[in-house]
Length: 336
Image (cartoon, rainbow, N blue to C red):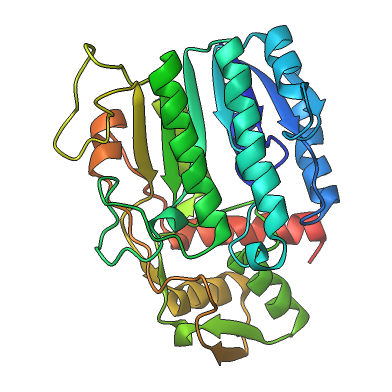
């Protein structure tokens, strides 16, 4: 297939591009190379993808008028995976405008381009942060998500709502997936695992929020992209098509639209993650305990019933495997 991946120089976009190219697909990767974090790392990811003859790189921002329309008109992709976004929960308190432009205006531009040039399946990366103040555990896709705690989460919920509307109006088969704390090689420097690794190797103290008791449903990046690739093969059908796969399904009654969690359903305490990182590094961390920052939640826990029903599997890689893989990459890339 011809597949357009937005955000292809990002952490997840890079790994998804590699996975799809290895499977024999032609991939067009679009990225704006924002300076939210090290652009050199993004360039290195894209350069690795560009070494494959079936990869085409397009540089530009989602907000640029006409860019997405022109790209889809030329490439005519069978599938679009929309990963590009302004990421980061805490950064949204400092630079809210970036989230409005990239995550809302940019997503609106993308779905307008897809409306003009229809695809077999449109997939959209949302986030577990969309569950916000939801107190029910585990987080089920059928839970009402009406209490976002940050503009980042709100911007992703807006994206979900816009995609549902277009799926209804223009019969665009659409799957939105909420992923849970993704980590692994080539990860984002603003994420806890990356920050902790850099500081421990530098002999600097690390800030541990909620006394280490906060829990996250860590998802290894290879598991995540394998799930996305499998979901690509299962576009939802609208009214009159195949019905829900169970009472836990989010298949819309009025549109070919579905929302799916991608996570393992096995939350791990932050202090246990740090223990595993110390073991992989062979060094102890100096831990400075801090309260949970504004916008953060104490626990994330994915319900996996729907994902398992759709693709027959859920993320399985444990931290004892995933963290050493990240540390090996970090030491090689940075010579640390």
